[in-house]
Image (cartoon, rainbow, N blue to C red; front, top):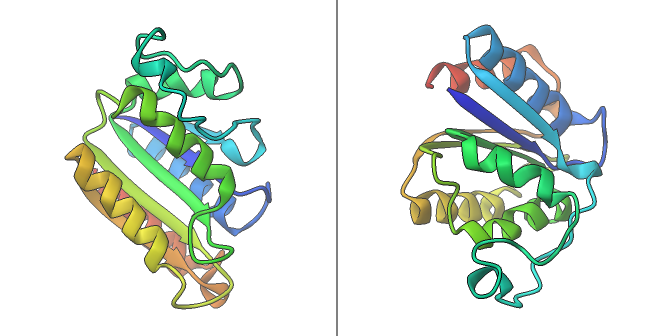
Length: 171
C-alpha cells in the first residue's frame, strides 16, 4: 500500500517524530511504500476560506506554499497516518494547517484507511484530537486502523514501539 505519514511536531527528534519514524520503518519492513513528511517544519498557511478552490481554481488552492508538495502525495496515498503532539488538548497547529487545506480536494481520492499517533506529556488530554480524527475518518468513509497514544512515561519505549508495529500490521 502507498502510505503517507504527516508528522506535525516542530521537534525534529521529539516523541511524535520518533513514533512517526517507527511507523515508517514498520510499514517499509512490511513491504509498503511510505512517504513521511515533516509538516512541522513546512511553511503551510491555514485555509483562507476564500472558496477559490471550489470556483475559479477548479480544485486548486490559491495559496502557493509548501502545501503544494503535499497535494500530489495526498492524491496517491491509500493510507493516511496523522502523527501529532498534543500541547493543549488538540493536535498541533503545524498539522492543523495541512488538515484544513485538504478542503480543496474534499477527500484524498485513494485513501481507504487512516491511523493516528499522538504524544503528550500529560495523560487524559487526547479526547479533542481523537474526536477530530474520528470526525475526518467517518466523513471520508475510510477505515480506522487504530490510534496509538504515548504520554510522558510511554514515550520512546519498546511497548509503544510494539503498539505502533501492531497498528501497521493491520494494513
